[in-house]
Structures are given as structure tokens and as C-alpha cells.
Amino acid sequence: MLKAGLIGIGFMGRGHLDNYIRFEKEGFPVKLAAICDIDPDKFKGIFIKGNLNVGNSKYDFSKYHLYTDIDEMLDKEDIDCVDIALPTYLHAKASVKALNKGLNVFCEKPMALNRNECKEMIDAANKNGKRLMIGHCLRFWPGYEYLKECVDSKKYGNVNEAYFFRGGSTPSWSYGNWLLKGELSGGALLDQHIHDVDEINWLFGMPLSVSTFGKKVIKGSGFDIVSTNYIYDDRKIVTAQDDWTLNGDFGFEASYRVAFEKANIVFERGALKVNPHNEKGFTPNIEKESAYYKEMKFFYESIINNTSNEIAPPQSAMETIKIAEAEIKSANEGGKLISVE
Image (cartoon, rainbow, N blue to C red; front, side, top):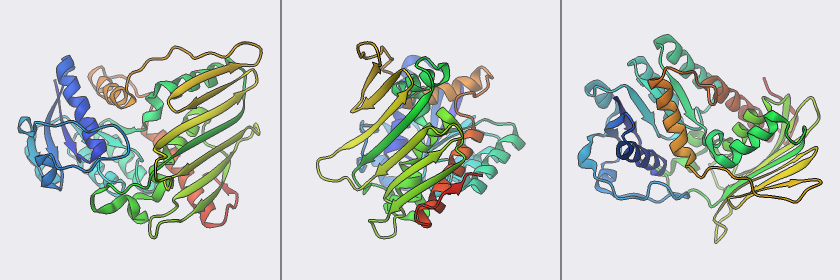
């Protein structure tokens, strides 16, 4: 039985907590022993709701050892793993600290604010012989897994064009409003758009270069609207856009449209549709399981079974940050084409 500690119970951290509760009900050999959060009000059930339908349950915190200090939890608890759902600017520091304590680490996306912090995390994992995985959930999302399968198998030929979109309301729910402080979150580009950056990296590998246009709408928050073209040597057209200023009744949307040589695949409003060029379109039969559940279970199974992480290795998560760094530089220079190195 693996024992885990959860650090951070903002709405994504509570989504992780939901999965530990489910693990316990299913008899999966992972037990959440301790929870740490700087805000003790959260242990009283006082939460701010986020933009996704996760972490909205009522919790019995008496089942866990509770802390408001990370060092105290790491010193006192006899645990095997740490689950980090902290603000982005704390990812590297907390991960390295836990890895140096000899603990395996599952850390929410994005990996860190920059490639140097990513390297520190990977070096600490390698030095201590421990597992490190970043929670890039699209790699476990059924609608995106299906797309990955079609790209890799060339079932419909090569990709000619791919477009990804993500957008919704301005995130006003974070502790201390850290999400809207660009130096802490990286703005929409690094916090929200990073999902599609990682998906593009997973599907096609690192691009040769990028051209990004960004707009700063909210004072101090970084780029709130971004549009990026990704350049590949086979000249396929790849674009991703993000906007977290879509307030009012818009809600939240994550979608893609990918044109292959023999078909196109469209995912929007949670619905997946395949349109072969010479046949009737259809909805493929894909699983309905939560990606948040799948990614965490995959991480723990890799420890239990001592299997390699082929789906979401930390080196790939660092590549995603390298792409995002090039996008930030390009946006700062008015869309200039920037090499990804």
C-alpha cells in the first residue's frame, strides 16, 4: 500500500482528493495520509469554485493528518509519494524538496515557470531515483487519445492541418489572485494555453519554430489572449489559440479540428466526430473515464508495477515549457518567428 501526501487543495487539488477517495472505495492500493494547504479555512470546507466541475464535494478532513506547512508535513509523515497541486511558481521548489526527501512526485501542470526549473526537478528525480510525472491531462483525455492514435497509426493518412482552441472566463478564484499575476502564473499562455502546447508536442513533437501574437488585457497578468502558428519541416499547418477573457455566459470550451489526407476529426463541446472524405461521418466509440483519474492511476501503477512512463515522461513536459518560452519571446517581439531550442 502506497501512502501519499497532497499539497494544495485549491479546486484542482480537490479534484485530486476526489480521486483518492475513489481509490479507497475501489480498493486501489494507494492511501492518502496527509493534506497540506497554507489556508486553514479550506479544512473547514470554505472553498472558491473554479471553472471546471471538479472538487465540488463535501469532505471529511478528519480522516487525514492536516498541515499548513510543507516542511512540517514532509518531516513528520511516513509517506511514499507527494501530489503537488500548488500555484505554478511553487512547483519546482516543492517538487525538488519532496524528491530530495526520497519521495515520488506527481505535480500538476505546467511543469514550472521556465526550463531551468524543469531541469532542477528532473535532476532531483534522477539523483534520488524517484518518479516524477507532470499532470498533462490531455494525454489521458479520451477525445485526445483517439486523435493521438489516428496521428500515430496514419489511419487517415498524414496530417495537413490542425487547429486547437481553449477559452473561458477570467480566472478570479485563485488564492491571493495568483493566477492573474503574470510573474507567478505565466498568464493564460503558460497556465491554460499550455494544455494545447503540450498536446501539439505529444502529437507532432517539438516544432522548428513558432510565431505568436499575444494581447494583454488584464493589468499585470501576462498574455490573456494568444494565437500561435507552429512550424514543422513537413509544412503542415498547426495553430493553437487561447482566450481567458470570454466572460458572461460563454462558459468554457476546449476544441480541435484536425484535417488528415483522408478525413477530418472534430472535437467540440465535448463531442467527437470523424468525417471520412468518402464515407458517412460517425462518432467513434471511446471510453468515458475521467482523464484526471486516469493520469493519477497511471502514475501510481507505474510505481507499484515498476513500469516505465511512456505516456508523460518529465523530459517531454520540459520540452513543452521550451515551446512555451519561444511563444512568450515571439509574442513579446510582435509575432516574430522564434526557433524552438
